[in-house]
Amino acid sequence: MANVVVPSGKPVPLRIPVREIVPWAVFAAVLGLALLYFVGAEQGATSIISGSTVHEFVHDGRHLLGFPCH
Amino acid sequence: MMRTLLIRGMLVGLAAAALAYVVAWFLGEPQVALAISFEEAKAAASGEMHEHELVSRTVQETFGLITALVVYGVAFGGLFSIAFAFAHGRIGDFRPRTTAALVALVGFVVIYVVPFLKYPPNPPAVGSEDTIGSRTTLYVTMIVLSLFTTAVALYAGRRLAPRLGAWNAALVAVGVFAVIIGIIYVVMPTVNEVPADFSATVLWRFRLASLAIQLTVWGTLGLLFGGLTDRALGRRTAGAPAAVVGV
Image (tube, rainbow over the protein chains, first blue to last red):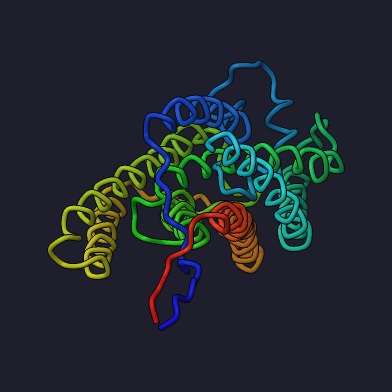
């Protein structure tokens, strides 16, 4: 009777502790939403910066990514 | 660990944006150009002066579009890695690449496809400037409701999993999601501002192009991020003690 060593096929599914994820999650959500706002809605529905340069600059991306535009 | 995942997510988002630009260039831009020429022909027919371009078309279809895609890709790449970190090991006993593919599929459907079916994207020349406020509010509301419905469905699935088994619980969760979204579709107001004489072909191709761009972004996030994470974690576990099996 021989003992054969076989690698345990599946990697152990590791769980990253929620405590460790939460600060990253909050930061990424805040930063991500702010960035998405500038691509998707600034100088359209609402304006933080006056004029329409931001709107015109990301114009094609806004249409093609599915955001409402005029 | 989280640091590595977040960096990988953002880099994969950048790669997704690059691929999306190729798709946008070949499928999207021709339709945008056709829509703009329709807009200009209409303006000329009604005797309007050609408005001064604030940003030239060349800049819009290159730097502008690239910027929009890169910001979108990196933002969602980062958020995707966080969603992956929450999901991995908690939604089932999956390999990293399977978790990543599932998270990307859910993200694509929840954040893009569900709002797309109710408020489809429109090319230039479609949509009045006066209603941009209400249309944006409706679109964002639809995304938020879709995310909320996902949370409800996930909760239902997790509660039912011990009793029904993972597969059946997942089917029930999808069913719950579909029913709630169906009700939301009926309740939310409809928007249709397509001019009567606008080309149906351009509209259809434009919307398909938008779908293809988003599919490229989410597909890259899911498959590339999954592949890289699978390899990295595989390398880590390769050195782990292997199971000893008596024969």
